[in-house]
Amino acid sequence: MLATGRDAEDDDRDRGRQCRAAGACDVRGRNATFHGSGRSRVLHGATLTAPGDGAAARLLYYRGVSVLALIPARGGSKGIARKNLQLVGGVPLVGIAAATAAASVVERVIVSTDDDEIAGAARGYGAETPFMRPTELAADDVDDFDVLEHALGWLDREEAYRPEIVVWLRPTSPLRAPADVDAAVAILRDTGADGVRSVCLAEHHPYWMKRLEGDRLLPFSSEGDDRTHRRRQQLPPVYRLTGAVDVLRAASVLEAGAMFTGDVRAYVMPPERSVEVDTPLDLVVAQALAR
Image (cartoon, rainbow, N blue to C red):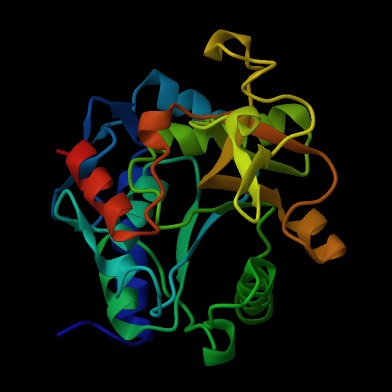
């Protein structure tokens, strides 16, 4: 039976911080072992080991900066039923996101969900669930900003906790590594930007895409097509959003009333870690790559 209630949440919060309490977690290898709950867990991404010199340097770098990982994981989904509980490498998607965040530079990992089963699974992998998301914020058409605003408002009101940086981690990117989170947060700090979004090279270039007028095939882009750019080497690089890591300055987001505003920078990820699980085929691909 899944644990519920504030006591269980506090216990899981303490266990989830054990890895970071020693200093931080280093990142090595293909598989990730999560030590946050006293039970080792293996997932695709990296091996979380005892901290070394690199981890100590990261702690010094982020001292005095509050970094929150917020994982949106509602119970409903259209493309895949109970998507956030689907397994990749034997671990639910929400658990992978929680363990990945716990092994990064963030100081807290919180899951925003309306679903008791998802909340219990998240706590099992070191995340906190100090509140349940209201039903009206769990519909298909709810904007991410509304979910973020609710979470930050609750934390401010109930705990007087006001993180400077928020890492928005969707559970649908199970192959993302803790190092990806660290790198994106570092870009935000180093550049002074308002936001950082993860991207990768687009698999399909818009110059080679088409649109239809009736059954007539026409170029999608007015800037070029397969007649002006016949070889892949001629195509200018374009990038797609991966959805894996978004890093935001909380003050900028709340002031603008939007997730991404002002100066937004890119964190470029390799395509093999940029799989986003939205369809059953995506899930099969992620499971295959995680083996």
